[in-house]
Length: 269
Image (cartoon, rainbow, N blue to C red; front, top):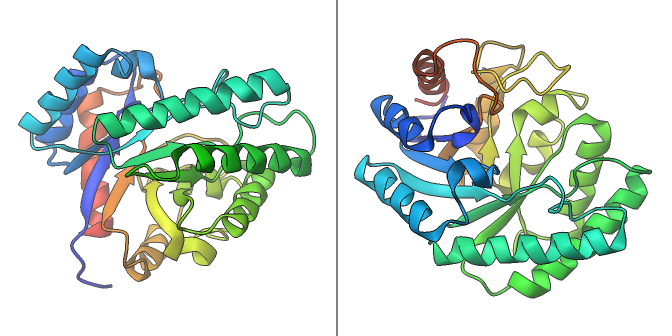
C-alpha cells in the first residue's frame, strides 16, 4: 500500500433531520478535512444566498473546506427526462445551479446523467448525451469541473461507461459511486476502467442489493482492493464519503459519523 496522504471528506446527505450546522460541528469533531454539499437544496439552504454564505463561513471556521456540491437530480432536474419540456427545464435549472456554484467558489458540481428509467437504456442514454452536450455549450468556460456520477443497476453502469467514452476529461469529470457500482455487476468493473478519470467520489458500503450508504466494513465491498485503484489515481487526493441516505439514522449521528471517520482512515491513512 502506498504512503500517499489523502484528505477525507463527507457529504451532508447523512441525515436531513439533523441541522446542517450541527452536522458540520460533528464532522469537525471527527477531523474530516472537507465537506460536500448534498443535493437536498432545502436542507442545505443552497438557494438562500444569505443562509448558504453563513453555512459556508461556518464550515471554514471549523477548518472544513467545501470540495463539491451535488446538483438536485429529482424532477425538475432530470436531464434525461422523457418529456421534452421537462428535459428543457432540467437543462436550464442544472446550468443555473452550476453557475451559482461558481459564484460560491465551489470547485466541483456532481450531476446524475439520468434519474428514472422510462424506456430503454439506449433511449435514456441518447437523451442524456444530448443534454450533456447542451450543458457543455452553456458552461464550458466556467472555472469548475462538472462530474458525472455512475448510477445503480447494470443499465446505469452501461450509461455511465458510454458517456465517459463520448465526453473526454476536458468536458466532464467522473464521480465514482462505490455503492452504486456494487449494485451493478462485477465488482469494480467501472473503477478499474476509469480510475484515472475520477474527479471526485461517493464512497459507502452496501450488500449489493440496495443503495444502503453504510459506513465502510458494514457491507460486502472489498475496501483494500478499492483502495488499490485509488493509489493508482494520482489525481485523486480528496476522498469523499457519502454515508447515510438523508433519512433519520437508526443510531445517534455522533456514533455513525465517528464510525465512518475511523473506517475511512483505516482504509486511506
